[in-house]
Length: 364
Image (cartoon, rainbow, N blue to C red):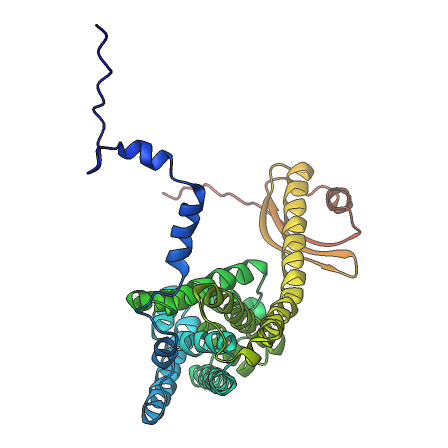
């Protein structure tokens, strides 16, 4: 007699196999579970979420004073950390910065079509922007840094004066995280982490520092980085809040929701244009430096690159190069031709060559 195969797998209360039930789970139920993690839970009311972001009534004055105090303190910490070239101090400033709250409130008010809340949130953001830039300016004037050009800037400052598309990607994902976190009271403690990832106050402090130093172009670029973060966070947070279940209060207001989201999307596109140009410039400069380095190795494999400055102006590569080697220099025009062929553009080369000198002496 043939015995039925023994099933030793785990079984549920009704005797069914857990593995079989899991395997037979329809894809729709998985999507429903994913959507349930995004949808606003019954315990998190829309009005309660908005009130916790920016309180109403008498509590608003207290909130505003606290916001101004924390903004100035965080901007001071950020400015000193930027000038001291200390990344750890700048991160500490991000933890103190309160700007993420009104930005998230602006996204929520956009989806809820609450114009009064939206205007108030934007005014609070504008106040924070002014305070942070002013503190950065004053800190730079008190510190008395003697900086002639951009090359003299501390690394932490210079790193926030040339934003690119990667910064936009960070802001988009941070905005999605902010929208998800703000709808759940159990996860609001993670909101400062979003502020650290997106860095709102350091770019504003950088704008103030560079303004005081007379580097207006760098100040504009630092402010562009902040605008990138602001536009992307409001847009993506609005989309996540809409998916979570946030809706306009009135049916008439709901008709303007696509317009509101369209305006925020246009703001993202507007900042993406200069970011794209910056990114292309960065890639182009990196390609030029790589072409110069490789050409130097072909020109003379025994030399070392001491200093390299390369830029593309009007379609011509402008190169300032300092080399050091043990032998007499080879013709500089050959190096210029090698760079031209490798990079594919006309080259203006200024070369300084230094001979290595080694002295081994004894005195007895």
